[in-house]
Image (cartoon, rainbow, N blue to C red; front, side):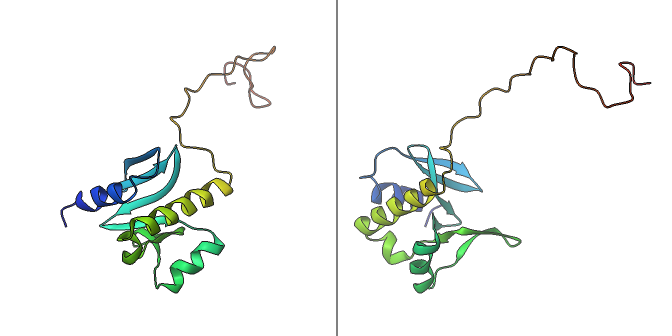
Length: 137
C-alpha cells in the first residue's frame, strides 16, 4: 500500500460519519469527529480509543495497544482488526464507540489553544520570594 492509501480507504469507509477530520500526528494521522480525538493511523495500522469494556473485544481478537515508539505504549488505543476495517458498517460502529469512550472520559474537545493572557499585577505588584527586594538583594 502507498502511504496515503490506508487513510484514503478509512476516509471512504467512514464517509457516513459527519464531522470527520484527519490531522498529521506521529508521522501518521490523528482522527477526530467534531473535534473529539478518537483514533490514529500509524505505520499502515488503525488504532481506536478504548475503555475497559470495549478493550476486551480488541484483545479477544488478538489486537494490541498503540506503540508509537518501542519505549512508548498508549494503553487506551488499540489496533482495529482488518476484518472490521474492511466492513464499512462495522468500522463506523467501532468508530462511534471510540468517540463515546473519549467523550465519557470527559476530555475536552480538541481546539486551538487560546492565546495566554498575562495576569495583571496585584495591588502590591508582582509576587517576589520572601526576603528579596525588587533589586534582587
